[in-house]
Image (cartoon, rainbow, N blue to C red; front, side, top):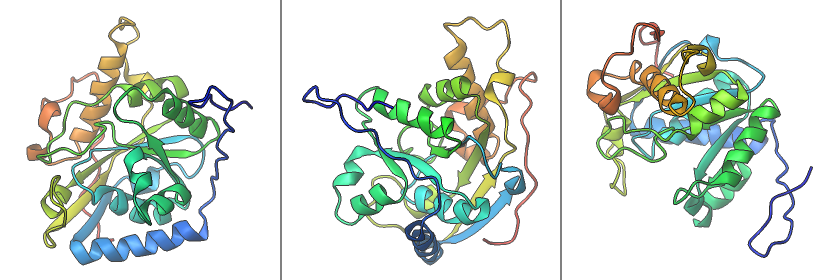
Length: 257
């Protein structure tokens, strides 16, 4: 399989993807749980048992805090028993220690200043190889904790790959570590609600105009996430989903994770 073309025009070797949960990832998971528990109390609820244990999978969540990545990775990796691949901002890879952990922990760089075709191709390959991909459709953290308008790349990826999507709503993380704050504010409670898996292609009306399909699919996806959040965090997707797009609401909170 050929690689991508680098800035010099020469063929670059294709990244070798590891799909197993390595000892480093298990260690990061343990460390992440200790770190997050030092900041806040965590409650995990919803359709956790419905998350597929194998095969291609997209995990899609709102994003309002630096806490979101360590929180979801540390709780979902052991619960799923499988490696999660992440798409993260390329700037992260320049940070000491963090960059090394990202490179070896399943995080792949994305250039958020443009439509990163290479990152989209890599995400497509991860799913084609039966991997689990975690994404934040908004593309960046919300400054208020409310859902922002999402980019349509994730919806396109879900439609083209046919991979099931698991919506995730993280409530309260913005109060612990809001965007713009260098350090967290320990306290409070963060709730992670897992929605039922769904196939995005099954929910898009068959007569949808091709020019509108990306926007409609993105709205359907984000309304699934919004339904898992408290009203104050639904933001741009606070309007109830149309009746033809039924939303599965998970059961109430489970014991602290």
